[in-house]
Image (tube, rainbow, N blue to C red; front, top):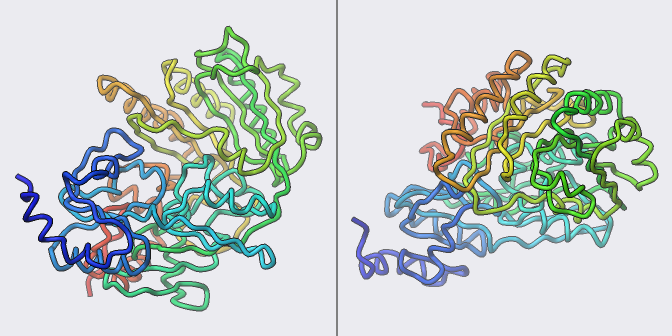
Amino acid sequence: MGIPEDAASARFAGLRAGFDGAVLLPGDPGYDEARVLFNAMVDRRPAVIAQCASPDDVARALGLARQEGLDVAVRGGGHGVAGTALAEGGLVVDLRRMCEVTVDPDVRTARVGGGATMSHLDRAGQPYDLATTGGRVSTTGVGGFTLGGGTGWLDRTFGLACDNLLSVELVTAAGEVVVASDTENADLFWGLHGGGGNFGVATALTFRLHRVPTMTLTLLMWSPAEAEQAVRAVRDLFEGGPDEIGGGVLWMTAPDEEFVPRELVGRLVCSAVVTFVGPEDEARDVVAPLLALRPAAQLIAEMPYADLQSSLDDPPGYRNYWSAEHLSALPDEAVAAFCRVSGQLISPAPAQSALFAGGGAAGRATTDYPIPWRKDSWTVHPFGLWADPADDERVVGWTRDLRAAVRPWATGAVYLNFIGDEGADRVRAGLGEASYARLTEVKRAWDPDNVFRHNHNIVPVTA
């Protein structure tokens, strides 16, 4: 049984008094809306949702959780596919009101609120032709994305999102507001490059920005029968191409768009998605080998980076199961295995099977951050989205089959933002054995009681 409404109101009255944001309890207007996640498989009822508007709100909410013995979950602005943004019967620190972005065009930096999405950041930088590595859709939350490493369209050009991170404002489990950077709390700052939300609540992040006056998106589609040849051509393009290109392959359901032939709409296709930092005429020269394969559908469009970011947004409200394998190489045999299982994705559906290229600036970086997948050449990302619970077993099984098919070429590392709850061993694989011991020491220093455990958790080393 839950706490009676009157008793719950009295229990959390102290938090509400002077709170800059909003405190939502079960039965309050807006409570049910506030607990809806991107992944419709997750349905949890927190005891209280603290919609924070300031670091002080965050500190007070954490203090209330300590006082009442409540589990703490932290909600940023984005997907959180694992569902860890909600704690059943616990307290949710909801940062979505803290989404302000302040751009300094002179020094090319942006200070980003912990609840901001990529859209907030991208749109704030657009008037100045400034951007930094974001995700591959505009609805990704900046905080969780960056603290997990952050790979996107621009990582071959400018490095990972965390490579462009200058500082983080963090509220610790004890309610202290600290700043982490290369010169202040440096070990904590190191841990925030891949270690996720294990060490505190990131209420603001400051980034280095880069000049991006224009982008070009190339989206080409082939039938499944032509897929292997197309994927091999995409592989060759990226393995010999410039740092200015990003993307890879996407098996998807062909959308009802003007550039898609009617006979292809609603059917499964193998697509090349190639982004280019530069104008359309230069992009056409780069993708010429793909155009020579005579795709059935073709879109090449120059646009601002912020518009490109929102052109392939994931639909909300579906059931989600994601996973990933990172590959050291992509020989023809791996291409065949990837296409065979990707082609079993039943259409029509919003599910996708992605193959993203690594390399470029992200792969050349020599940092010691806990990102063991940085130098991997390719990432296979089965992206299960579906509506009917009766399809749970089928789609989850397909996701696992795709991982198994490419495992002979897998490195064992994994980008944790691409997976749900796959156990402690996968968390260690996502951080690297060499780094994990150091991360447990950072965890003990900043969250010895493991308050922040609703995540890809790093357990603090015992004294």
